[in-house]
Image (cartoon, rainbow, N blue to C red; front, side, top):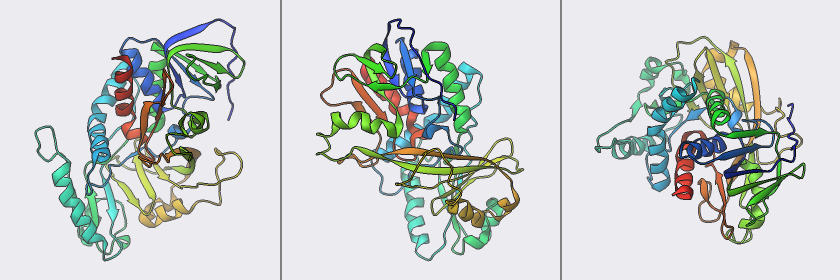
Length: 379
């Protein structure tokens, strides 16, 4: 990866909101803040989308509708609003985010799964509601013989049938980022290759690797898993001395496969098969807590996710792999919230905030959690 390096001309920079990190969360912070009239600078260490946001997968899958809680409700509302949010972004930028409410198909491979599915089907009727309290989306069970009618997943993998929901969706992560980046370039100051090395807590400025500084009334750290070492000294006390988060490496591949863009996501046993427009299919992903070397280096020995996907959709066996991606996703380990997203002030530091997405759900909720944080800062 060619990494741009920002070198200051020593001109003083200042803004209302400084964003540290140019992934989907940082760009959403910038969009909300700019639309509210704030001046915004975004510092991205490498290039926009160089982290977890820049992959292929783009699966927008809701939490299961049983065991309902506030986190699931927030995600549900965010996913419901996403089509409108994307449409406005596309109107503003002329970009295409590749959003489609494609649905999701999940096989039932053993005899205990139908009972679990039954609870989730009932839960979808209770919780997947519109603003008038009427069912908006649903999950339903399919007999093994019906799997053939729904799509491309082999019925051999579903001896006890399958579940299908019409709520799951997909977005093209790189198209999404491209649209957000264009808005940022037109309405904010976006600096790629700008590595923030010191937050200078409470001092209302940050220091970059070249020694230059940027003053900001508010600084919001959205740097994915690389935010953890930056914030750990400031948040360790609130987490009883423990680590506030860790990185989890993931991998995905992109295939060329002719289809009519009406197919659903297929998901089973941590393997995702996500159909995209233009005859593309994304497959992922791994969850690797320990790795060696470059986190963006694709590990050819770690392809079990792809092999599992071919068992789900055997017709993909001859589809050529045209792209490979590896990156690290943030997984929060805050004591009182687990992997829930963090989008709050950093305790005890005036003007410093953090937005770190929920594990594997950031693309679907990023617009919502950043909207809430920016609104609280600018109110």
